[in-house]
Image: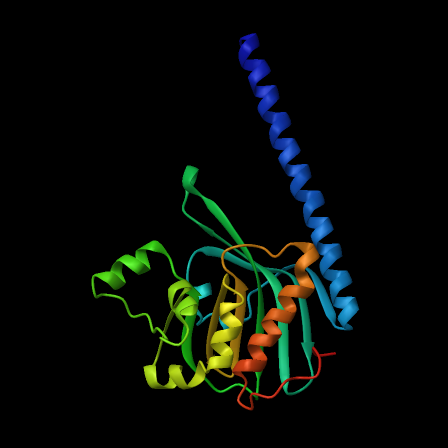
Length: 228
């Protein structure tokens, strides 16, 4: 092999090795952060890859891609409410177009939830265009223009959705404009829209997800503290 090609191959090999090391140590730091956060709450932490719970697979968030795994799972269950927090990973495309997607989410199953099936996510340019053309299914609320402008809300039964999304719920989402939330029956998932939560913001995200659960719970009463 000519010398320039040898040099180039060596540079590529070193770059790939550096990327691998960065990923390895980054994953170790993330695992340590999840473990420490779980310990601060007094709940279970499971390191490594896990299967996505089967009961969540009907949600749209898990309908795309392959190689779906849950990483760094923390879990609490008090007999009434079960809560999971983890990094969700899946792959789309193939060959040079292969892309791995990662985002952090909280999943809650509780007797206190009785939700119509819905999907709430940040509204994008395509959503706005289809809405202008009369093809959108977005449910808006004149009393909350920021929510209506920033979020796309769809689901089964507009009447039930409007009854579920009371002013207090809309206020909460106006203060948190980058969430992906889905609900159905006694299950709820809250995710950062398409991205991982930084290690230093685990507590903040967990509290946001718990606040969404509180506002959407059947009783609508504040919960005293996260599960232990």
